[in-house]
Image (tube, rainbow, N blue to C red):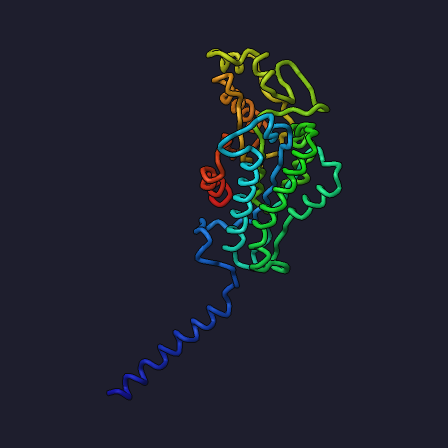
Length: 303
C-alpha cells in the first residue's frame, strides 16, 4: 500500500516542485520591503518635478510662523515627496524601474554652488543603475540639500520672486513631461504669483496676483465670486498642452486681513489649471508636514 501511494504521489510532488522552481526562476527581482507602504497595483513610471517659490514668502522675519517657519514646512514637504518616490520605486519590479525626481527654481539661481545642489536632486533610476542603497538615499539627499538651498536663499535676502507663470509657459513641457510616464509637478508656493520681469495684463487677466491685487480688484466682500466670473478675472493662460501633467500645489498662505483671500487664490489656480488642460490637480493650504504626509503620499502613490 505504501509503495502504491509513493508511486502515485511522486509524480505529483515532482510536478509541483518543478513548477515552483520555474516560477521562481522567471520572477523579476524587486526591492519589496514590508516597511514600505502598500501601494495600488498601478506601477507606472513616475516623473516627479518640484518647483520651488523662493520669494520672500520664506523670509522668517517678514512672515514669522511660531508653529513652524514656512521654509521648514517646505523642507518637510520635500522630504515627504522624496519618501513617496522611494516607496514607489522600492515596490516595483527591477526590470520595470524607469523613474525620476527633480527640483527647479525659476529664475535659475546665479549662484553656481546652488545650481550644483539642485543637480544633485535630479535623480533617475532604471534597471541598470538602481540599488536599494541608492533608492533609500533619495530622502536623505532631499532633506539635507533642501535645507542648504533654503538657508542660502534666506541668508542672501534678495528675493526676486518666482517666475511661475513663465515656467508654465516656456519650460514645463520640456522639463516636466515625459512620454510613457506619469508626470507630476508639485509647486511649493503661498499661492500668489509675481515676478518683476513678467507683469502682463490683458483685460482682467494677469500673469501675477499679490495681496495688493486682490484688494485692488475688489475681492474683499461677499460679491467677489460673481465679479470674478462675470468680468473674467484670472491668470492669463500660459499653456494648452498639459493634459499629460498632474499638479499638486502646496503651501497656500493667504493674507489674514481678508476672509475671502484663500477662496480667491483657489479660484485663480483652479481656473488657470483647468484652462491649461490639467485634469488632475489639488490645491492645499500651508500646514504642518505631519498633517500633510497622508495627502502628499496619496496624491503621488494612488491613482
